[in-house]
Length: 352
Image (cartoon, rainbow, N blue to C red):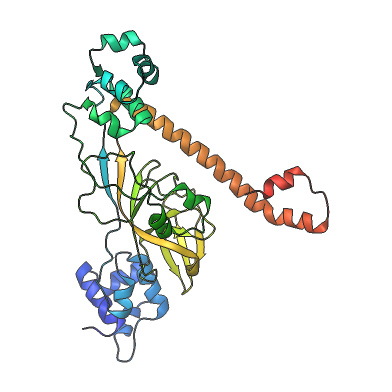
């Protein structure tokens, strides 16, 4: 087994069909750097190793430095499991009376929920359009509606294991352990009834994506399924992780090592800046094993796009407000310390 870093890097170069000249050009190294490192009692310098790992992101840091584990970093791109309630151009056969009776409401109530008249329900002969089904599911949940709906050509709904959800309590108090919440509360995704969802996938929790920071891979309203890493030291430089750390909301970011004690968290969306945290600030960290994404037929794609654009505009506005507050904090602190004007505007800016 190769004992020097350069020997292991040679193995990687052979696997990737690289030569010294190509590596030198790609990394911007001085001519002869790679060749000189092969000489007896010499090896790659720490600086060159960092350049290698930052450029060849599929190369495992642990393997290159210590010869442990696999040479290549595992692909961290999550599986996307898509589901659609029904094709947009087909009606769904629904036992409307059955739903009304099960919920102890009248047909007039059902008509109000779906935005139609009672006469419409009487004339539709038990067939509703997807827009109606979506409203019923929003009101009563997928499971209730599925018991009374026949989706004809749509994929049959399967009974799947429920998953613990990262509750709002975690983000309300960013210093809360997800594992502790799961153990004590263990709320489940009862309102999600996905088709063909994640068979035999061992995951610990799921959370609804709200941020646009990792577009295009992670979209708002995706459910991300997370496998928590017990040993927080066993994370790999250059991989994407789900992170719960002190004094911050949970997030998904690409992680880059900065020395021994710090991590740089990088967003895919260029509108978001990097975040640097201390390793000790991590409460929970895990891999994103899969996404559950509800897809929409052509009839709804435009409306869904508009809704998501509105959500992005709201988030961007909130980010601008937060950035403004962060920029002004130092100035506000100086004003307070000097005993000058201390009005409601300053108090408002200090609230966060």
